[in-house]
Amino acid sequence: MDMKRVYILLADGFEAVEAIAPIDVMNRAGVDVVRVAVGGSLEVTSSHDLVTLRCDLLLGDADFTDGDALILPGGNPGYLNLRSSERVCRVVGDYYASGRVVAAICGAPTVLAMASVARGSRITCHSTVVDQMGDYEYVGDAVVEDGNLITSAGAGTSVEFALAIAARLVSDEVLLRTRRGMEV
Image (cartoon, rainbow, N blue to C red; front, side, top):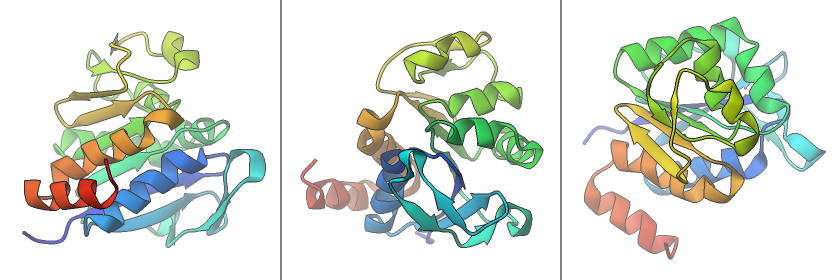
C-alpha cells in the first residue's frame, strides 16, 4: 500500500488535543502528515496559548492535490478562523467532491456549512454549534461517518476521531498495530 498523505489545517486558536491527537495517530500509522498554517505565519498557536506548532506550509503555498484526507480541528477561535478563509472552504469542497476524506471535529463542522459541502449528511459537532448546522442531520454521537465525511464532537473524542480517519487510510493490520501501541 502506498504511503497516504493527510493535510491538517491549523489556524490560530485551534484546540490542541484535536490537532495533536490526529497528528500523533497518523504518524504512528505511517501516514504522512502535512501541517498547513491558515494565516500569515508558519507558527500557529492553540486556544488558551497552550501550544505553538510550526507548520510545514502556509495555506497559500499548499497544493493539496496529492492528499488522501483533510483534517479540520476545532477550537475557539480556530474554527472561526478556518471558516473565514475562502481558500479553506474551496479546498474542503474540492476534497469532498473528489471522494477524499474530509474530517472535522468540534466547531470545525461549521466549515462544511460555510462551504455548502455535504448538505444533508449525518454529522456530529460540539454542542455549542449544533444550531449552525441547519441543513445537516445532527446525530450527536462521539464520531459520525457518512460517506467520505467524518465528524466528531470535541476534545474528548479526539483519539477516536483520529483512529476513524486512520481506518480509512491504512490496512486493518496497521490500524490494529497502531491501536495496540496506544493501548486503545
